Image (cartoon, rainbow, N blue to C red; front, side):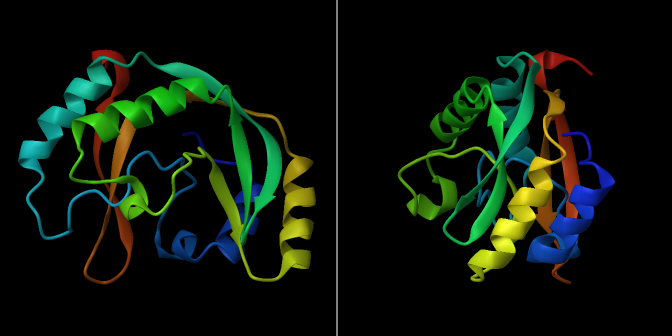
Length: 163
């Protein structure tokens, strides 16, 4: 994903805990995925197979919405993201999305987390002013949490077998 506009990125860093720990704006495809202490070499080939079968695709972040304790940006179309998520879930049944906690898959970019509804409303309204944001999914990027609690980018696997 390309970076968000600066104003939205500031909001996200102020209101999303893991943004301050190095997690970039993203759409989660499969989480959790392998424990940090597990060697990932064997998994990378299977991820690459899924990515080779998925051509790069465009989408746009078109709406700012609220659900529960988050404000988020919704992508359209959802279908290519849902298909990629389904392919990963099929390839890695030992890693159910969010530990199986949610029945519905909702692709999104989180821009705020709070128990304060008014704060979420303000963030949502501000975010809506910056939409739509055009994106192109070209690769899957593995994020790994270090022992220091900071997240870092791991390997990048291109979609469609490209470089």
